[in-house]
Length: 358
Length: 254
Ligand SMILES: Nc1ncnc2c1ncn2[C@@H]1O[C@H](COP(=O)(O)OP(=O)(O)O)[C@@H](O)[C@H]1O
Ligand SMILES: [Mg+2]
Image (spheres, each protein chain N blue to C red):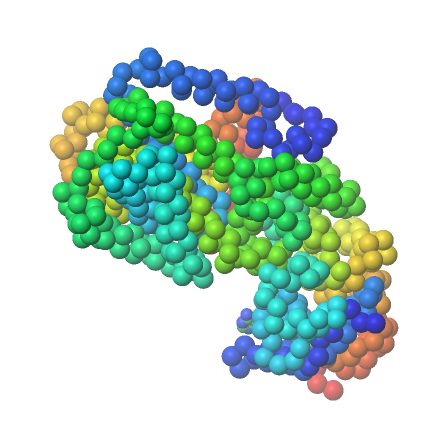
């Protein structure tokens, strides 16, 4: 067990809990930068996909995990980001402009959906965002002149300052840079007044208000930022899939995003990353064992979504702090070994399930 | 000179007149207590002052301003802070974060500056932290600083809620049953703090309280309430001796 001795207030304002923590992240980043030199094209592509979903996960985490607002329509923001980016690229706008434009437009859409739903929470908000998601999905399908309708269209390869960012490796580095940037932004916010205001709204609206927090304003900002980050993920998603079709942005994708934040662990950025890893790995794991499953279970349609659903329910019931909670317990167990006490590893009753999305 | 005045305020919930025709004023620097049986309308008066409820009649004045129509999130900025009867802390945040949220009304930095955590934000954060540390030292909360609220006992949470209200640097502090759920020692400690807040920090206090010993010890004036109406208003001894008040507490008809 390590205790960090603090002597200055600045030490509570750092991004890392300790210098050792900073070193770990630096090593991880260095390793990630070297990955394309070591692994094959397929794995690099899959990791790029993981980064894209991690970015979207961070976006939704800000809304659901930190502000306590559920959204079942986040695929819409992913779609808005993807189409904004791809359409502007096709019209010859440089990528350095289309990427921020994707984030900005999705962010504005987020504020637009945020404002009318400010007074809603829980189930009502879930249904309103679900409806919004399906409206955007429909628009993408019907607005052929812009989106290419059902046929979709191929996404142009982006280039920055004349250098093409092509292939899996290009998307990999691009997504990694955006992921690190987005994490930096959100971590900054969380140690500043605005992030604290989000947490306050999540835990008690009435006292947040009595502390001077303008609920409507901050909820709209949370929606906007969350949607904007998800829009950036959408822009990268377009390059990850290379071919955009409107049916990619359906309710199933929204549920996958929600699964990321719940399974990863609400209220933690690590959780968003862990959740994205889980979400990307599960289909691979299913593919591996598919042929060995009894009763032809492996060829059953809808196996994957049902498994996601089942795991989501089990996590909410038995490990509400998600993978991140498991990870923290494991870290403490190793840190205190052999002095750990069993009782410290029991779940805190006080973080009751019913309260989490209120 | 009165810091706060309620004139003829009232509110109805459906058919129930929770508060009706209540008037009182609170002088700068005093501890003003509101007593009364359960359901008398004490918490409702606090909710009217913090603008969570809209009065159906009457007006509220604070510090020379009419605040009857001020939105709820502006109340803290005017210099009114409160605690809640059933503790409303941010349960999944640390004590430090809770107290820092108390500083929200003093936050001046823009969103973009916060996203980049610019030097201006860092400086402001250190300044807020220094103010929060003053409150931590005042209430002796040092050893709980980094703990999650959800892991703390009730008595400590009560003190933290008081601390969070103090972090806003209010002129007027509303305490809703500060001693409920506390044991005898904790209640005595609360009495000392209320005295200190009044004397050392010069903050005016309106307190809703059931513990008559605490009320007697700290109050300059007391208002007794029953079924939404004022029964008596005066010093603690006057009010406790008032026949109407005694009758309301014993509950029987004369
Ligand atoms: N939001 C509300 N809706 C309906 N009735 C309410 C509401 N708030 C308070 N009341 C009613 O107003 C009366 C006074 O309540 P309250 O002010 O909480 O009493 P207390 O003096 O015990 O704090 C009670 O009859 C209560 O049921
Ligand atoms: Mg009450």
